[in-house]
Image (cartoon, rainbow, N blue to C red; front, side, top):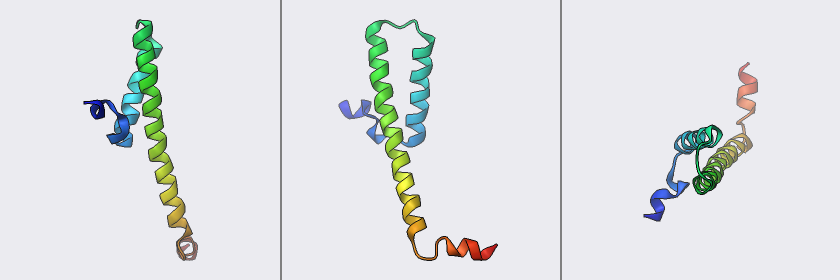
Length: 78
């Protein structure tokens, strides 16, 4: 069951959407201290997961740009 709560299996969009929901709930208020802390911790984990996805996407883009002819083919086409 702990894996079910872990954001490690979430797609970027799933993690982002849940993070937005957590932020809304925290901004709205009305939660007790324990729930607010749990939401904050969940938000941190979700933000880390989103950052992992973004870092991976950046690495893939950098690798694609580093391939020979990747940039030259676009410049010559225009």
